[in-house]
Structures are given as structure tokens and as C-alpha cells.
Amino acid sequence: MSEFTFGLAASPWIVAAIILAAFAFAVVTYRQTRPEVRPARRRLLIALRTIGIALLLIALFEPALSFRDIRADDPSVFVAIDNSESMTLGGQDSSRIAEARAIVRRIIASDVGDRTDVASFSDTALALAPPIPFDRLNASGPATRMDAAFDLLADTMRTKNVRAIVVLGDGRYNTGTNPLYEAEQLGIPVYAVGLGDSVEPRDLSVQQVFTNDIAYVNTDLPVEVRLKAAGYPSGMASVTLRDDNGVVATQQINLLPGSNEYTTSFVYRPRSEGMARLRADIAGSGGELTSKNNSRATFVRVRSDKRRYVLVAGAPSPDVAFVRRVLERDRNITLTTLIERGGGEFMGGTLSPALLRDAEAVIVMGFPTAATSGAALSTLHNALSNGSLSLLVVMGASTDIPRLKSLDAFLPATVGAPRTNEMQVFADLTEAAPSHPAMRGTLPDIWRALPPIFRSETPIAAKPEADVLAWARIGATRLNEPLIVARKLGRSRSMMIAGYGIFRWQLLGEGPRELRGEQTTDVLDAFLGGAMRWLGTIDDERRVRIA
Figure 1 (cartoon, rainbow, N blue to C red):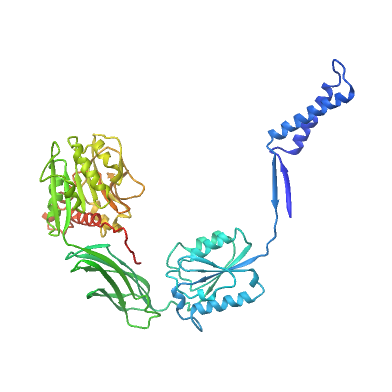
Figure 2 (figure 1 turned 120 degrees about the vertical axis):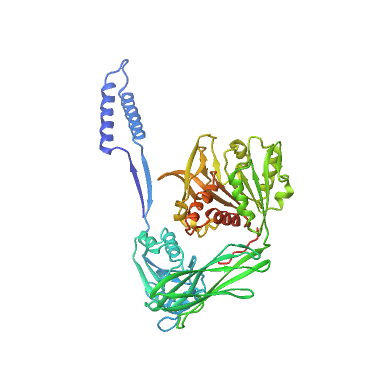
């Protein structure tokens, strides 16, 4: 059925009253004319004036002509089936996926069968057109993302009169958003049919193996294994880390009653270059629902143990001395230090393309300065352009902002107009900082106890694709400007410390505590080590990630 409607911005009665008034005015106006006209012409003039005023009024009151096609669709049912690997587990009489297939067959054979839409979901949702391909319901999905089914239903409801959804699954999702919110937004009844035992079975699983993508020969690599145990009253479980050559280490964890998550850490020291496969296994006292999730593997590219860095400084400073000492203390690092002395010359060598080509990362401290030559800047710019050289910028009192802006394409932050005023700021870590690879394991409490460093009032803003690891803070007031910011864009990586005087973190932060005999953490050493490892991790263009 189709409907036409015509509407105006004002009440039709008001418009009609104005038109009648216009008609009356036209009659009075043309009642007597000079010269006299025939009655037929007088009536024509009255009609034309009335019609003209009526059309003008209609135009002023925004006429709207609408057409509505009304179609009555019969209500339908949407059936969503969990097609993830967990559905291979046993149900009441058979596997969960077999029970789901049987339920769908009964629905299709019922009176609402011709008004039923079927879809499967795992990490994504897929609509199944009739006839239903039951062979594709084989519980082979890698994850359970229940909200994907509700997203697909929302699209279906735009063209069909879906009045209910039936979800067939084990009720457990492990990726995506909370499906409760998606279901509430649909505004239709959701009928969940639970398959399997409602009591959580005994199960040990390795959730994630977390480590760096790149490791170095004879260099310790931290490996974090995240585990989950459910259905155990108490007991012990054994966690083993293996590489291609055998067992790396084994640890015991104490299982608590109920469903809990655990984290254990290993140290892996590769012995040779190449691609290493690390596998974490967990074993308990037996009686598990399944052992398919008791292991998880990841791959690490092992490189030569010698990491080559270049440090370019605008002038000698305590920051340069402390950073140089920290890096040179690591026998796996080859550091070339160049200190500018003007005229395009450097103490310690020459800033050449060959030197930068062999380096994994370049550290610029208080550089470039007003005396930096265009040739030196061009050499650095060209080396950074190929994407294989990472950049760490430590601002300094001698940093020339206009010259630094020539490297803007490689910086993780945008630097504003230069200001010479100086202030002291504290490092206020963000919530994301401890999980960032450059600062993994960082404790915010230790950073809060560090002394302030210096920075100018030059405005600095993180680029959209960058991660702010620490904000600048004055007293208890956090500034809306980053102090430590990192960026990974394609294959290139960069980091900026928007301040100077970082030697104070070690000298004033750790020195007094060591004199008092207190246990300390060398923040500067740990931060530089993590930052340089992250900066030196340049991904291959044809990388393969295995989750």
C-alpha cells in the first residue's frame, strides 16, 4: 500500500484564512476600476491575484510532498550458532556442535522454518543461505566473538522483520566486546540455548605468550606467559617453556579454587641466529575437559648479539655522559659517539651515510644546534628516510627548534614555536606505559619518586599515531603535553624525551637511596635498555605473525 501526504510548515487553516483574506482584498480592489472593464476580465484579475498570493504563501510555508510505501512483512526468527572450536567438546548426548545442528534442523522443519534466518559465528559472523550447509557447521573457528552475531543481525533487521534471536552456544566469548550491550540495543527478545555442562569444567589453558619480536644471541629475553585455570579446588600446575632445542625452564604455580588467571615469567637466552619457536605448555593433575588449549607458541627472530647505535650530541653534557656510560656498559652494544664542534665537524668521527647505514638506531641529544651544517642534517634525514633506522630524540638546552623541524616527518611529536623559558617537570606515566614494549615492567611508583628534569616552554603535541608514555607534570598538575612519546609507523620507530637533565633520574633519584643502603632500581638504565631494544626492533616487510 502506498500513501501520499502533503504538508506545510504552518497550519492549513491559517493558510486557508490568509488565502480567503487575499481573495476578499482582490474583490474589493477590482470592484471599481478605471477605466471600466468587463465583468469577465474583472473576475480573471481577481482569480490571478488570489492564485498568485496562494502560491506565494505555499512557497513561504515550505511545502513537503511525501510518498510512503507500506509493506507488511511476516515476523521472522534469527538463529545464531557458535562455530568455534569449543563447540567440539562434549554436550549432554553428543558434541555441542552436533546438538546445535540438530536444533537447527528441528527449527527448519517447524512451522517457522520458512521464516528463519541462520548464521554462524566464531571470530566473525557469516549468514547461511538456504539450503543450510550443515557441513560448514564444523566448530573450526579460532575464537568466540558473540557480538559479531548481533552486528550481523542489526544489518539483517534493516531489510527483514526479525522479531527474535536464538543463540546456540556454550555461552563463553573470548574476544570482542561484551555481547550484552549489543543485545540490548537490538530491542528484540534474545533466547540463549546453552549447550554443554553449566558447571565450569576443569580446564588449564595457556592464554598468551608475550615477548619481543626480536631477540639477540646470548642476550636475555623476558618471556611472559599468561594462564587460566578453572574448576580446580586447589593444587599445583607445571608450566614449561620450550624452544627448538628442548626445555628452557619449568616453573610451578599454585592453583586457587575457582576460575583464575595467572602470569609467570621466564628468561630465554638464544644461542644462535635465525627464527626461534617458543612454546609454553601447562600440565596439571589431570581430569581436564580438553588438552587442546594447554600450549601456545610464538616465534622470535634472533639476531646477532651486537647492536650498533650512533649517538649524535650537540655539545658535551651530563646527559650525554650518563647515556653513553649506560649503553657502553652493555657488552652487546657497539656505540659510536659523535659530539658536534661546529662547521660540520664532530669529535669522535664523521657523520657519514655508511655509519648510519650500519646502525640500528641513532640517538640525537641536544641536536641539531644553531651551528649544525645543512650537510649533516641532510645526511641524517636521508638515513632516516629508508625506514630501517630508528630515532631517539632527547631535547636539550642547545636544540635548535627550526632545524629540528626539518626532521618532523620522523618525529613522534609536533614541535611548536620555540620558547626559551625553562621549567622543571616530573614524569607522570600513562596507564598504557607499563604495557608498552619500551617500558615493559615499569613500576609507576618508582617513576613518581624520581626528581624533576628540565624542559623549555616550547609547545609539543603528540602525533595522532603516537603513544604517550609519560606526561609532563608540575607539582600535582599534569600538563597537556607529553614528556615521553613513542611512535611506530610502518617499519619506522621513533621516540622523544621532551626534556633534558635525565641524568638526575640516576644521580639524584638512585644515588641518595644507595648511600642509605636501600634497594634501588636503576630507572635510567632500565628505561634506556628497553627503549633501545624496542627502537632496534625493525620488522621485516614480509613478517608473519602467529597468534
